[in-house]
Amino acid sequence: MQSQSQSQMTDTNSTSANYPRLNDYQPEGFYDEVVCADSVARPDSVALVDLLNRLPAGELIRRQRAIERSLYQMGITFTVYSDAEGTEKIMPFDIIPRIISASVWSDVELGLKQRIRALNRFLDDVYNDRQIINEGLIPANIVDSCPQYLPQCVGLKPPAGVWCHITGTDLVRDNEGSVFVLEDNLRCPSGVSYVLQNRAVMKKNFPRAFADSSVRPVNDYPARLYQMLRRMAPNDMLNPTVVVLTPGVYNSAYYEHSFLAHQMGVELVEGRDLLVENDHVFMLTTDGRQQVDVIYRRVDDTFLDPEVFNKKSVLGVPGLMRAYRAGNVALANAPGTGVADDKVVYAFVPEMIRYYLGEEPILNNVPTYLCQRDDDRKYVLEHLDELVVKAAGESGGYGILIGPHATNEQRAEFAEKIRENPRNYVAQPTLQLSRVPTMTGESLEGRHVDLRPYILCEGPDDVWVLPGGLTRVALKKGSLVVNSSQGGGSKDTWVVASPGQIVARP
Image (cartoon, rainbow, N blue to C red):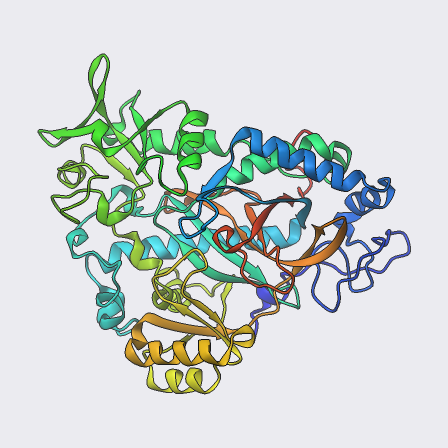
């Protein structure tokens, strides 16, 4: 049963004759975020639909190709190591934006702030007093068996109790338009660079529709990120040195690391560029050593410091954890946050919200079966043809079985994996994800989407949510997998401003 706030988190439907109908497009029974069931524009999509109807034949595809050329020239890439045709790929982009009403976004924003507050409380608790475990709300073996739970982080006390400063939480809408949290990404969430670049090219190609739609801006994200990182500096120093730590050019998100460093005006460094001496971190420059005060790390936890984690790591900095524990350098995000990424731990977030905040969740989880539980496992094995099964620690669209679209052989293979390692698997109902009109050849067809908003957390009561985020679209007809590594693309996300809110300039 949906909570009252959840049931209200849907767009207002309207079939008013004053609203245009999108020509030659049918929602085909799915919840569409641009038009209603009869192809009539939703209230916030009127300007977009009107423009699409007025464009001359061939103009939309011409603009789509112009944007693709622009993105190619800007070098907006990601890496797919398993692709035989080459690893370096241009992020596919679709020209039709996703539009989110002010009322829906208001609830989403409140729900995300609530969620990150609870997750930070959980991380601080689980590495220290473990009260939520001792009181029986989360079984100890759920946490202790999580590969991302790092005993080396026990006893850490990040300033202000903030473990996760930068979060990307994946949301979906079902066939009723209700919003659900699909998963949390609290280690090194990627994709925000595509949000900023998508917006830049869209404003150039749809300036009138953009202006008429009262869209909220996203271009202040790098400035907000930089100010948050500066304020994290130890001892309230006035002019701290901030760096972005990257694994290097072969990382799938290297473009984003470079982009954000450039936008913030800070150095992009690799582990070999840093050293620790007397529990302080220094950057090696042509002018000598320079102390580093804040590190926005895009290196996974276990590669950060070979003295503490993976001893074979050449990506991290020996002694970094000593400097961090001594309070001489700040890390965003703190090491150890991956335990809250785990898809089994995810199932307990509603309980975390109730326990730590004394509130009911504003955003619901997708109902989740834990294969570690005997009854859940029995149900999942008997209903593999109906469910989505996920490996607890995988990401990027890997380790997933979409039961209704799988073969008998694939379902049998997953059944065996579940029996061998039930802790590693969860299952969820197969949601009919919402759709958005998408360019397919020279025509528009509906394609399924999800959304990754980005959240910056400076303190327990100082949380900011980027108005919009990365809309990922499954470009293959009928597909529910939106990840770029699995053939998905992205769209610009237009969050409509409420009265009094700042509107982006075209």
